[in-house]
Image 1 (cartoon, helix red, strand yellow):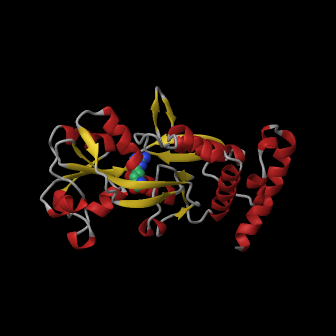
Image 2: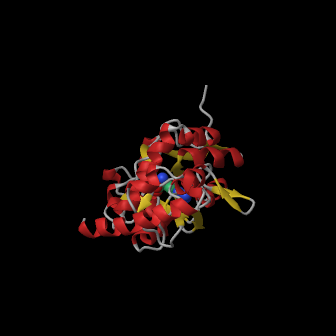
Amino acid sequence: MKTFKRIAAGILSTALLLGMTSCAAAKQTEAANASAFTTVESGKLIMATNAFFPPYEYYEGEKIVGIDAEIAAAVANKLGLELVIEDVEFDSIIAGVQGGKYDIGCAGMTITEDRLKSVNFSTPYATGIQSIIVTADSEIKDIDTLLDGSFKVGVQSGTTGDIYMSDTPENGGVGEDRIERYSKGNDAVIALTAGKIDAVVIDNEPAKSFVAANEGLKILETPYTVEDYAMAINKDNVALKDAINQALKELTDDGTIPGIINKYIPAEG
Ligand code: ARG
C-alpha cells in the first residue's frame, strides 16, 4: 500500500502536467485522476481479446468492433489512454494479463472463482448466458438429454462452456471424453453443421449470431448458466482496476455503456 501511494503521487504530478498541456486531457474526468496507475506501455491501454465472438468482438474488414471494443475504447478515453487491441487465442488471455503482457483482458470474459486466483476483475459491465446449439432436427431437447446421452459437445477452448461441460457428470458436465475443443466458437459451429459433433455450448449472443449465419441450427430454450462479464486486470495493478471501475461507473451513469450494448443487442419488445 505504501509503495502504491508513492508511485501514485509521482504519476499524479505527471498527470497534472499532461493535463495542462494536452487538450485530450480535458475529456479526462475523475477516473483518470482519482488514483494513478501504470500500464504496460505508457499512454496505452493494451487489451487482449479473441475477436471471433460477435457481438462482443468481431472483425469488420480489418477493424475489430463490438461491445467490448467500444466499451474499452470509452474507458481508455476516460483514462487518457490510447486503446490497442490484440487478437489472441482466448485461452492465453488470463496468463497474458497475469504475466504483464496486456493491461486488460476484455473478451466477453466471465468472472469465475478459478480465474480470480490469477487476475482481478473489474465490476461487471454485461451479462452472458451459456446456451446450447443443436441441429434443427436434433433429438437433444434439453440439457438433461444432452448430459445423459453419449452426445459429443463442441466448445471454444478454455471458455466457461469448456470448463463446465468437461467436468464430470456428477458436477453437471459430460466429461472429457465427450468434449471437442476448438480455437474459435465458430469452428465448433461448423463442426456441428458437418455432423462431427452433436451440440455446441457457447455464450448466448454469439450463439444467436452463429445460428443466424448457418442454416439448420437452433438454440435450445433452456439456458445452461447465467454469468457476469468483466475486464481481467493484473492483480498487482490495483490502481488500474480502481481507475477502470471509476470509468465504468461514469460510463454507466451517463448512459454510454447501456447505449453501446443496446446498439449491438437491441432490447426486445
Ligand atoms: N464467457 C465465456 C468465458 O469467459 C466465453 C468468452 C469467449 N470470448 C471470446 N472473445 N472468444 O469463458
